[in-house]
Length: 66
Image (cartoon, rainbow, N blue to C red; front, side, top):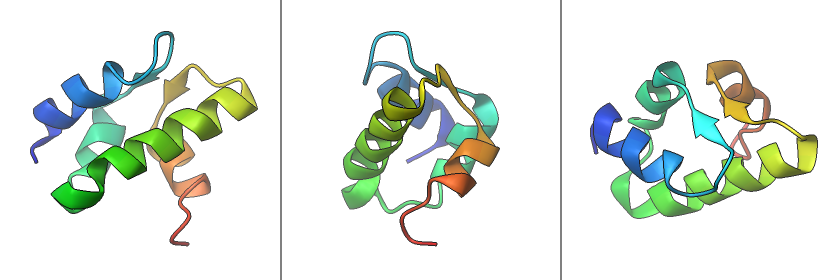
């Protein structure tokens, strides 16, 4: 999945939470079959932490795969 498609899907996942271009570019490394799960995990983490913009640093800090 390309970064633009990821951005569209990710930004539609939860009202009030957006994914930066950098975060979407980073998410291109996630296999397509796992994309929904990855987006959901990041949205949940953002909600729990009171974050409204998901950036590369947030992805790295909240990556369940280490």
